[in-house]
Image 1 (cartoon, helix red, strand yellow):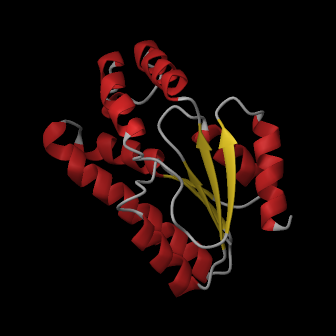
Image 2: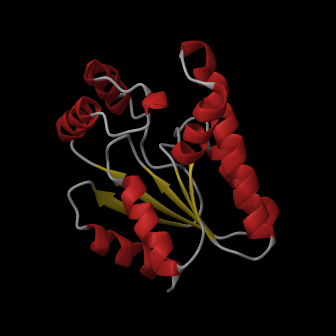
Length: 179
């Protein structure tokens, strides 16, 4: 089973995905975790961001594929792009014979923008992400354009809101997985 946790930045998808993987006792793969290791190895900056982004997704798909090939379900989490990331996830599921369950965590645009700006202001994320409160305007524009809408994937879709109880989200996804 390939459990894909999607949604915009600051929606709480990483925390929910981690909790889900713990409760299901299956591997948790997060694009940002891979990005952070790449930042540590190669540095960060505008000139590297596109390559780090592509490499982190390639690693995520590779590790997920290896796990699925070994018969191990995985939780893969990222702010997957609804326009450009669907094909790779479809190929991965098809090649490995995996059933897909997608959990999409969204929320009110202004609430997401406020949470993103607050998180950036607190500075708790890895410095390689280079989040700035001023980036909130770009986030708003991408949200309004539907950049992080649910992915057009086969299988079950569990939609949740950033204000939903995390354990409730996990229970709903577990039910969709048949666990």
